[in-house]
Amino acid sequence: GESVGLHLPTLSVQEGDNSIINCAYSNSASDYFIWYKQESGKGPQFIIDIRSNMDKRQGQRVTVLLNKTVKHLSLQIAATQPGDSAVYFCAENNGNNAGNMLTFGGGTRLMVKP
Amino acid sequence: KAGVTQTPRYLIKTRGQQVTLSCSPISGHRSVSWYQQTPGQGLQFLFEYFSETQRNKGNFPGRFSGRQFSNSRSEMNVSTLELGDSALYLCASSINTEAFFGQGTRLTVV
Image (cartoon, rainbow over all chains, first blue to last red; front, side, top):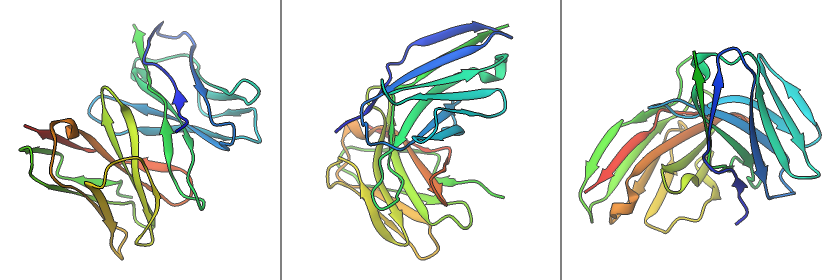
Protein backbone atom coordinates (compact mmCIF):
# COMPACT_ATOMS: atom_id res chain seq x y z
CA GLY A 1 0.00 0.00 0.00
CA GLU A 2 0.94 3.60 -0.22
CA SER A 3 2.84 5.06 2.67
CA VAL A 4 4.12 8.25 4.11
CA GLY A 5 7.83 8.20 3.39
CA LEU A 6 10.24 9.57 5.94
CA HIS A 7 13.58 7.97 6.70
CA LEU A 8 14.94 8.33 10.19
CA PRO A 9 17.62 10.99 9.99
CA THR A 10 18.82 12.98 12.94
CA LEU A 11 18.45 16.72 13.05
CA SER A 12 20.73 18.47 15.48
CA VAL A 13 19.98 22.10 16.31
CA GLN A 14 21.20 24.66 18.78
CA GLU A 15 18.85 25.69 21.56
CA GLY A 16 16.97 28.79 20.48
CA ASP A 17 17.28 28.10 16.76
CA ASN A 18 14.35 27.15 14.55
CA SER A 19 13.91 23.52 13.45
CA ILE A 20 12.39 22.25 10.23
CA ILE A 21 11.41 18.62 9.83
CA ASN A 22 10.27 17.39 6.42
CA CYS A 23 8.04 14.58 5.23
CA ALA A 24 6.94 13.27 1.84
CA TYR A 25 3.67 11.42 1.38
CA SER A 26 2.53 9.32 -1.54
CA ASN A 27 -1.28 9.10 -1.29
CA SER A 28 -2.60 12.11 -3.18
CA ALA A 29 -6.11 11.30 -1.93
CA SER A 30 -5.20 11.84 1.72
CA ASP A 31 -7.03 14.76 3.26
CA TYR A 32 -5.78 14.86 6.82
CA PHE A 33 -2.23 14.99 8.13
CA ILE A 34 -0.81 14.98 11.64
CA TRP A 35 2.54 15.51 13.31
CA TYR A 36 3.38 13.51 16.42
CA LYS A 37 6.21 13.76 18.93
CA GLN A 38 7.46 10.63 20.68
CA GLU A 39 9.76 10.78 23.67
CA SER A 40 11.63 7.76 24.93
CA GLY A 41 9.36 5.31 26.74
CA LYS A 42 6.19 7.15 25.78
CA GLY A 43 3.50 6.90 23.16
CA PRO A 44 3.24 9.43 20.32
CA GLN A 45 1.90 12.80 21.39
CA PHE A 46 -0.24 14.91 19.06
CA ILE A 47 1.43 18.18 18.06
CA ILE A 48 -0.56 19.71 15.23
CA ASP A 49 -2.73 18.67 12.31
CA ILE A 50 -3.77 20.08 8.95
CA ARG A 51 -6.45 19.27 6.41
CA SER A 52 -5.83 19.20 2.70
CA ASN A 53 -7.88 22.35 2.11
CA MET A 54 -5.22 24.34 3.98
CA ASP A 55 -1.60 25.20 3.17
CA LYS A 56 -0.48 26.32 6.59
CA ARG A 57 -1.53 26.00 10.19
CA GLN A 58 0.07 27.51 13.24
CA GLY A 59 0.12 26.42 16.85
CA GLN A 60 2.16 27.41 19.84
CA ARG A 61 5.75 27.59 18.52
CA VAL A 62 4.88 25.11 15.76
CA THR A 63 3.77 25.56 12.17
CA VAL A 64 2.81 22.88 9.68
CA LEU A 65 3.07 23.55 5.96
CA LEU A 66 1.38 21.40 3.34
CA ASN A 67 2.36 21.43 -0.32
CA LYS A 68 -0.09 19.23 -2.18
CA THR A 69 1.57 19.81 -5.53
CA VAL A 70 4.70 17.96 -4.48
CA LYS A 71 3.05 15.97 -1.67
CA HIS A 72 5.23 17.42 1.02
CA LEU A 73 4.66 18.27 4.68
CA SER A 74 6.93 20.16 7.00
CA LEU A 75 6.95 20.93 10.70
CA GLN A 76 8.61 24.10 11.87
CA ILE A 77 9.48 24.54 15.53
CA ALA A 78 10.38 28.05 16.60
CA ALA A 79 12.97 28.75 19.29
CA THR A 80 13.73 25.07 19.82
CA GLN A 81 14.14 24.02 23.44
CA PRO A 82 15.83 21.00 25.07
CA GLY A 83 12.37 19.62 25.84
CA ASP A 84 11.72 19.40 22.10
CA SER A 85 14.29 16.61 21.81
CA ALA A 86 12.34 13.56 20.61
CA VAL A 87 11.44 11.58 17.50
CA TYR A 88 8.92 13.32 15.26
CA PHE A 89 6.54 11.46 12.98
CA CYS A 90 4.25 12.67 10.25
CA ALA A 91 1.12 10.66 9.59
CA GLU A 92 -1.80 10.65 7.21
CA ASN A 93 -5.25 9.36 7.97
CA ASN A 94 -6.44 6.85 5.40
CA GLY A 95 -9.42 5.54 7.34
CA ASN A 96 -12.60 4.33 5.68
CA ASN A 97 -16.03 5.45 6.81
CA ALA A 98 -14.54 8.44 8.59
CA GLY A 99 -12.45 6.11 10.69
CA ASN A 100 -8.92 6.41 11.99
CA MET A 101 -6.19 4.55 10.16
CA LEU A 102 -2.89 6.38 10.39
CA THR A 103 0.01 5.70 8.05
CA PHE A 104 3.20 6.92 9.68
CA GLY A 105 6.48 8.06 8.25
CA GLY A 106 9.72 6.62 9.56
CA GLY A 107 10.42 9.48 11.96
CA THR A 108 13.11 12.11 12.47
CA ARG A 109 15.13 12.35 15.65
CA LEU A 110 15.54 15.93 16.83
CA MET A 111 18.45 16.65 19.14
CA VAL A 112 18.69 20.04 20.77
CA LYS A 113 22.14 21.15 21.88
CA PRO A 114 22.25 23.49 24.88
CA LYS B 1 -9.25 13.62 32.54
CA ALA B 2 -7.49 10.27 32.44
CA GLY B 3 -5.55 9.40 29.32
CA VAL B 4 -5.40 6.16 27.38
CA THR B 5 -4.41 3.30 29.66
CA GLN B 6 -2.70 0.19 28.39
CA THR B 7 -2.00 -2.92 30.43
CA PRO B 8 0.32 -4.55 31.04
CA ARG B 9 3.26 -2.21 30.37
CA TYR B 10 5.72 -5.06 29.85
CA LEU B 11 5.28 -8.68 28.88
CA ILE B 12 7.60 -11.56 28.11
CA LYS B 13 6.20 -14.58 26.28
CA THR B 14 7.57 -17.71 24.67
CA ARG B 15 7.27 -18.56 21.00
CA GLY B 16 4.02 -20.37 20.26
CA GLN B 17 2.14 -18.84 23.17
CA GLN B 18 -0.66 -16.35 22.83
CA VAL B 19 -1.06 -12.95 24.46
CA THR B 20 -3.88 -10.53 25.20
CA LEU B 21 -3.27 -6.80 25.59
CA SER B 22 -5.77 -4.36 27.02
CA CYS B 23 -6.60 -0.73 26.26
CA SER B 24 -8.92 1.62 28.11
CA PRO B 25 -9.69 4.69 26.00
CA ILE B 26 -10.31 8.22 27.17
CA SER B 27 -13.81 8.55 28.57
CA GLY B 28 -16.26 9.33 25.77
CA HIS B 29 -13.99 8.12 22.99
CA ARG B 30 -15.61 5.36 20.94
CA SER B 31 -12.83 4.71 18.44
CA VAL B 32 -9.86 2.59 19.48
CA SER B 33 -6.96 1.81 17.14
CA TRP B 34 -3.98 -0.46 17.59
CA TYR B 35 -0.47 -0.02 16.20
CA GLN B 36 2.71 -2.06 16.24
CA GLN B 37 6.03 -0.21 16.57
CA THR B 38 9.34 -1.87 15.76
CA PRO B 39 12.77 -0.41 14.93
CA GLY B 40 12.69 -2.05 11.51
CA GLN B 41 9.12 -1.40 10.36
CA GLY B 42 8.27 1.71 12.35
CA LEU B 43 4.67 2.36 13.33
CA GLN B 44 2.19 0.14 11.54
CA PHE B 45 -1.60 0.14 11.79
CA LEU B 46 -3.19 -3.08 13.00
CA PHE B 47 -6.93 -2.35 13.25
CA GLU B 48 -9.54 0.10 14.47
CA TYR B 49 -12.72 -0.55 16.40
CA PHE B 50 -15.72 1.72 16.70
CA SER B 51 -18.89 0.84 18.60
CA GLU B 52 -17.74 -2.76 19.00
CA THR B 53 -17.20 -3.21 15.24
CA GLN B 54 -13.95 -3.39 13.33
CA ARG B 55 -14.01 -0.35 11.07
CA ASN B 56 -10.53 -0.50 9.50
CA LYS B 57 -7.94 -3.25 9.20
CA GLY B 58 -4.25 -3.20 8.38
CA ASN B 59 -2.13 -5.80 6.63
CA PHE B 60 -1.34 -8.16 9.45
CA PRO B 61 -1.89 -11.92 9.49
CA GLY B 62 -4.95 -13.48 11.10
CA ARG B 63 -2.92 -14.30 14.21
CA PHE B 64 -3.57 -10.69 15.20
CA SER B 65 -7.13 -10.05 16.29
CA GLY B 66 -9.01 -7.61 18.42
CA ARG B 67 -12.33 -6.77 19.92
CA GLN B 68 -14.09 -3.89 21.59
CA PHE B 69 -16.55 -4.03 24.46
CA SER B 70 -19.67 -1.97 25.05
CA ASN B 71 -17.75 0.37 27.36
CA SER B 72 -15.29 1.04 24.47
CA ARG B 73 -12.44 -0.82 26.16
CA SER B 74 -10.52 -2.90 23.66
CA GLU B 75 -8.30 -5.94 23.67
CA MET B 76 -5.96 -7.30 21.06
CA ASN B 77 -4.81 -10.88 20.88
CA VAL B 78 -1.82 -12.41 19.18
CA SER B 79 -1.81 -16.17 18.84
CA THR B 80 1.10 -18.50 18.06
CA LEU B 81 3.66 -15.85 18.91
CA GLU B 82 6.76 -15.48 16.75
CA LEU B 83 10.05 -13.81 17.61
CA GLY B 84 9.20 -11.09 15.10
CA ASP B 85 6.13 -10.11 17.11
CA SER B 86 8.41 -8.50 19.68
CA ALA B 87 7.40 -4.85 19.57
CA LEU B 88 5.79 -1.94 21.32
CA TYR B 89 2.03 -2.21 20.86
CA LEU B 90 0.28 1.13 21.01
CA CYS B 91 -3.38 1.87 21.44
CA ALA B 92 -4.97 5.18 20.43
CA SER B 93 -8.42 6.48 21.20
CA SER B 94 -10.28 9.11 19.21
CA ILE B 95 -13.49 11.05 19.38
CA ASN B 96 -13.12 12.51 15.89
CA THR B 97 -9.90 12.43 13.92
CA GLU B 98 -7.40 13.42 16.63
CA ALA B 99 -5.87 10.26 18.07
CA PHE B 100 -4.47 10.11 21.60
CA PHE B 101 -1.98 7.37 22.30
CA GLY B 102 -1.28 5.35 25.40
CA GLN B 103 2.22 4.51 26.60
CA GLY B 104 2.11 1.11 24.98
CA THR B 105 2.76 -2.49 25.98
CA ARG B 106 6.30 -3.70 25.36
CA LEU B 107 6.03 -7.36 24.26
CA THR B 108 9.15 -9.50 24.12
CA VAL B 109 8.92 -12.94 22.57
CA VAL B 110 11.72 -15.34 23.50
